Length: 299
Length: 299
Image (cartoon, rainbow over all chains, first blue to last red; front, side, top):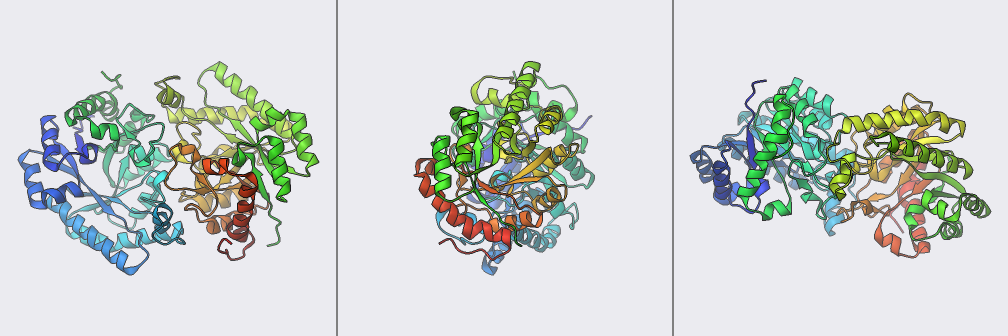
C-alpha cells in the first residue's frame, strides 16, 4: 500500500499544555497534524487558535468534542443542541471536517456519583433513543457547515457516566439514517479493542464510507483508580495494534492517526519526551500494521 | 406469571465467611438456595460441604467456577482441562447441574500486570479460538456427569485479565455447536447491562434453552480502585433491573436468582445485615420485574 499515514497529537495527551505549547511541541516533533480539544481552543480564542495552528503549518485532524445528548428535559436538550452547533462552527473555523461526538450517559449516573440529577432515570433504552433523536436534529446544521459528526463508541465501562454508545456496531446503526459525509464513526483502540464484532464492523464502516478517524492508545492494566486515566502509550498495555491496524487499513482508511492518551504519568512528563516515545511506538507498532509491513520491537 | 422465583446467596458476596457460616446465614435468612465458590468448598472438604448444605435444607444453585482456558502451552492446557474436570465432579457431588465458567484472559495480561507471562501474546482472536477448542474438549466429560458448562460473558473491562468472552452473543455463539443441556449461558447484570444487543440475546438464550442462570448485582460508580470490587447491592448503582428482569422472564427463565457482589464494604459488614438488605432489594427491585408486577421503591 502507498497510503501516506500521518501521526497526529491529540491535545488530550498533553493536557497540561496551552494550545500554543501543544502546537509548538507538535511542530517541533515534525508532525503535520494535531487533534484539538475545545477547552484549549476556547482559552486561546477561536480565531487566534486557527491562526496559531496554521502559522505552525499544522492541520487539525479532529475537534474534540461535541455530544452529551441524553438530557431528559427540554431545557437540557436545547442547551445541548446549542452547544453542539457551537462545536460545529468551531470545527469549520479550524478547518477540520471531523467533530468527535461523545454522546453522554444516563441521568442516573450523576445522582449515583454526586447525589444530583434524577435518581430514578436508569432507562438505558430510552437514553439511547434520545441520542438518535438529537443526532437527527443536528445533522442538517452539520451538513450546512461541511462538518461530519463522528460518533465515538466508548468502552462499556463508561456507559453510565460518559456515553451510552458502547460498540462500533451501535454507532454505525445510529449513523445509518444519515449521509456518510455528515455522520461517521471513529475507531479508538482503547474503547473497542475487546469487541468480538470489531473486524466485521470496521469493514462495514469502511464500506459505508463512515470511517472518519482512527485513534490509538493502549489499554493499561490494572485499570487506574480514576478509570478515565487508564489509557496508555501504545505497547504499554494489552492491545494488539498489529491486528486492529490491519483491519483499519483493509477498510480503506488513509487519514491521520491521532494519539489520545489520558494518563497522569504522561500528563506529568515533558511533552517532548511524550512525543518522542509516541513517534517510536508509532513507527514500531502502529504504522507497520497500516502499511502491511511486519511489526518491529520498540527501539 | 406464576413462576416461583427464588433468591440465592452466592458465597462471593460473603467472602469472609466459611462455607458453614455462609450456609447458616442463608438458612437463617429463609433462603432455599446458595451458590458456592470452589475455594470455600475445598476448605470444608467436598463431602462435608455437600452434607452441610443438605443438612441446612439448601440447594446449590451453581458452582463457581471453572474456566481459565486460554493457556498457549500444552502443559497449561492440560492443567486447565484437569482442573475443569475436577470442577465438573464437584458440581455433580454438590447436586448442582450448573458450573459457571470464567474463560480466562490474554497471556499478555499477566505480563503487563506483574512482569510474568508472555509479553508478546496479545492475540485476542487466537485466545478466543483456544476457548472454543478447550470447551469442545470438556463437553463430553460434562455431559457424562450431567453438568452444564455455563459460559459467563464478563464485562469488557475484564477482557484482558479475566475473560476474553465479553458479550452474551459471543457466549451463545460458542455454545452453539454443543447441546443446550451441556453448554449454557448466565446473564449477570453487572457484566451485560450496557450491551445494546442484550434484549435480543437474552431472548435467543431462552429460545435455545441455554439460559442457565440469572445473577444480579449493581454497577457502582465510580468504578472501585480495585475494578473487581465495583459490584454493588441492587439499587445502589446504575442498572435498570426492571427492564432486564422483564427480558429474562420473557425468555422463560424460572430458576433461582443469585446475588453475587464483590464489594469491600459488603465483605466487611455483618452477613445478616447483607442478607436482610438483599431480601429487601430483591422484593422491591428484582422480583417484581420477573413476575410482571410494578417495581416498588426500596423500603
